[in-house]
Image (cartoon, rainbow, N blue to C red):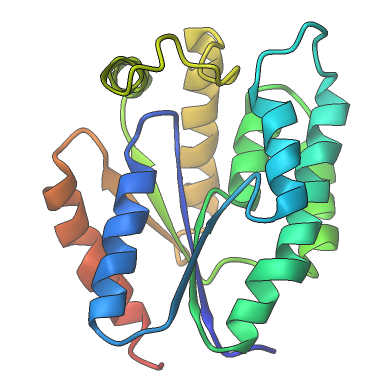
Length: 216
């Protein structure tokens, strides 16, 4: 088994997880750790192509089973090309979404059987689970408002992410799914209130991660 450390960031749209991932990356690098930062879906050339298919609004709807298989295909390539090699080099791998996201979005929110998703996750990852997961939890209304504000600030107009365009009940199911997953995996999860400011969230995440990294 590789000797790196695998940290994932999860949460609803606009929760601030990506910001926290990059803050942690900069901090860990400043402390001398080797860090690989990546994301799902994506992280590879193939995965980024799949990401475009999954997130961009399409003329024809994507069947939920097709959506799941595309995500898992992206993950299999991601593990092979990025995550496992980085862990073998003893890097700390920071990943923006991973298997818990699939369970929350395609399982809890869209009704696919959780045991089937978990079996696919085990298959595509070679039974690799994150060593530590940070769940940034915030009200879905706040998260969606942030995504709209971000789109306006960056001049992108209305977001092209089709998941962000789902109705409020969809996002509520995603949030509840995440909380239930975290409840079942208390030893792995840190739940952080995402309604506060980024610096405050980082001040909670940073010492929790350092505590987990003592053995490295």
